[in-house]
Structures are given as structure tokens and as C-alpha cells.
Image 1 (cartoon, rainbow, N blue to C red):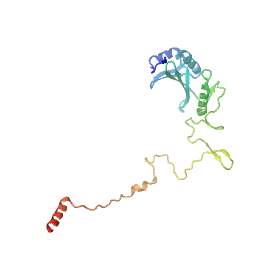
Image 2: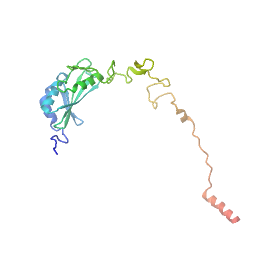
Image 3: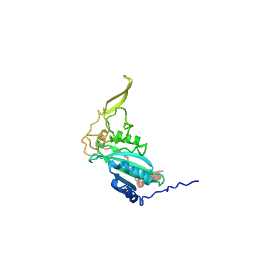
Image 4: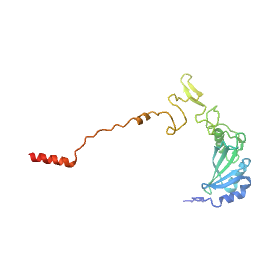
Length: 232
């Protein structure tokens, strides 16, 4: 049975120093955190950094491209690339940041599967990728407006769809939440609400105490039994 040359457990020892020696000029930050190597690249150099990691450091596979939204930052979006080295059995994470209007260079020139991954980030966050020739929505429906993973996108969305028996087709309508029987004060029912929740009125009623018949003490019972015995 052939044994693969990749180690069963890969260590981070020396990895960060080796990577910094070749890509540090294109980085804003590099660190090891929570057992992972994390590189933060300059946005316009992200393709160069990833190409170097692929060709010179054997990180052959692009496993995932994800996004994150931090609205309080000037460049609110983080684009995260997860790379895997099959020969080293090792993973690293590369990040870059951007805003709503500045595109990120595509990496479809390095990995064809990045096309769909970039489309997911575009669909969910609205981040555009310069050079992606097929940048269109991939997860949301036709005609969808907005980007659901942005922190300022409402949890309910703006529209809902249903099948109309009258029109015999799927129709789009503004979201309507049927909450006629509820009052929202945005407080926890356990902290400060001034209304009575259904069932709470029972807590104010006194508890019914069942009256128990007093049982004679053992000594009295024995005396009665003795007296009955003497009468016989």
C-alpha cells in the first residue's frame, strides 16, 4: 500500500517566516491566530499573493472564498480566501478588504472554480470582482434586490413570494408579518415588560392547600388497641 508523502498532521512551525520572505512586500499584516496562518494582502495585490502561494509554496487548491461585513469600518467588507496544500496537508487563510464601490481583482485567472465562489460573494455582499466575466447572482432568485448578508439588510427581507391560485403563477409581494395578537416593546419578557403574558395571571392566585386528616400518633393508637383487648 502506497503512503502519501504529505504529513498526517501539519505544523505551523516556520511556515509564517517562509511565507513572509516571499510575499511580505504585498501584505498589510501577517499573523498566526487560533492555530491558523492569516495573511492580509493589499487589495490590488491579492492576485499576485495568491499566485505566489500557489506556484512557490504549493498551495494548490482554492477551497473557499467567503465574505464578512463590518459596517463600522471604512472598508466594510473582508474577502477571505482559504487555500489548501495537498502535498503539505496544510491550510492558510488570505484576506483583503474593500468598500461598496471598489472592485477586487478576480482570481479566476488562477483557479476556474473561483468564478462561482466570487459570484456567491457578489450575490450575498455586493462585492464586485474586476475581471470576472460572468459576475451575476447565483443563490438568490431572479430580480432579487439587495444583498442578504450585509448587516443592514433586514432579516425578513423586502419581498416574499407565493403561488397565487388566482393567477396560476408565483407572485412577489411586500413582506407582511401577521402579528395582530402581539405587542412588540423589544424588551425581554423577563426584564421590564409592563404587560401580563398569557398564563402569568395564574402566578398571582394563592395556591390551594389540601387539608390533611390528622393521623393519631403511634402511642395513642397502641393505647386504644390495648383498651379494646382488655374489654374482650
